[in-house]
Amino acid sequence: MKPKVIFQSLGLIDYQEAWDYQEKIFKETIDFKIRIRNGETDLKTTNYLLFCEHPHVYTLGKSGDVSHLLLNDQSLDEHHAKFYKINRGGDITYHGPGQLVGYPIFDLDYFFPDIHKYMRYLEESVILTLKEYGINSGRVEGLTGVWIDGQKPSARKICAMGVKSSRWVTMHGIGFNINADLSYFSHIVPCGIQDKGVTSMKQELGREVDMNEVSEVLKQKMAQQFGFEFVK
Image (cartoon, rainbow, N blue to C red):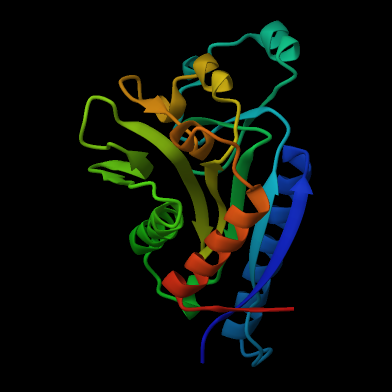
């Protein structure tokens, strides 16, 4: 039996609101796993895939360096941006309109209990999505995310990733630059990496890209890669 996943599109949503919603599902899933382990139910946990966009926001992971944010409070206000220290792995990143954010809240016990493999599957789903648009991408040894020209001096990241997991339940996820305003990345050291750039599908293709279309392609690539099916 294929794992079942409920997809929800949250649209343009405040970061804190989306984070709270993730935390609610994450906690409910872990609590349910404890009930299963205690023999209180023979039902299975529910997997979710949330897609959204955020207003301008910078987020710093647990292992991040706050000095990688190059704006003070006043400058954040001037750029209509917020800043949060959050509970995922990784350093600092940017989310904003035109970036597709994906939050899989998966119980990996029904997929594979391997976070390294999970991250590689997320990357591969994005790589396969980009291939549909004629964009060749890949990985950079020792770094997470999806890159264009990863082995060249012109290396640039098109999709950042950072996750949290507990009892093999995941949250947080990916920030995939579709039509994002890349100037906002100039106010941080993205993911703590100082010698590589960032890019977007718009920049690579020289045109605006249909966000809904990319969302549908990525959904299907994830379903194929992870071997799940969507349910209502």
